[in-house]
Length: 307
Image 1: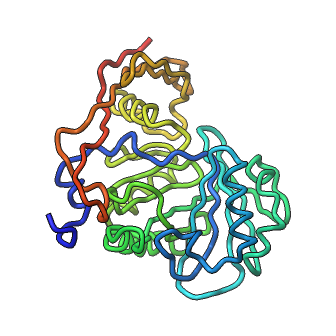
Image 2: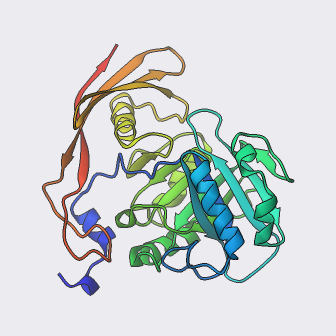
């Protein structure tokens, strides 16, 4: 198949690829407003000074499970520039917001303290606001531009005037073939193949502290098998509240088999899922730049029980 004749996101949808167990893993997310064109590698290809680039790369190496994304709304430079430190976790996630007059101010912020919940250098700590990111990084993958930008506009219009919710375009979040990708922060919920119609519905449920199972990729704070197990337990129980389940533990039973337990937050009931990873029967180009088709890791439920 010619590389110019397909979109990897359409191939994924046509193959009915399961999206659960695919959310990019990260506990601390550094979201930097960069209202200019993004190259294929946003940070490396940016016009940020070598000092700022070096500082950000050091942060990513020293803060465990940290990720960096560029964000923007309307094109063109403006002030102030926004910088968010998001702590994604199962309980009490939060966002620390900073306003900068220039990117060099990043060198003055104690990001590690902000990630620990200690607002510093003028940061504003909040746990009740929502940030919605839609990947529109077309220079990385054409699917993100084709499908992402329309979803971004629909999401932006949906929250217009809501002071508790904000929508941003983002650079590459992982999983080009799942475009349009939507992330709900601070919890770090990932959704795949979002449309102009489904995006606002997902956002509304998130604001009501519920998640949607359709095209749910998982929580960033969980590993891939745990993400899949959460999906299966919620599907079996119908528990959709953000805080309805608490992760307990996992045990690896084999190279591709795990037993994962969750506990309900109210009654203390333990739900256990035995999850296996398999390779898909279908093969696809997993990005629009791929030159060969590959099988894809998928997860299946082997056993579910209530203890």
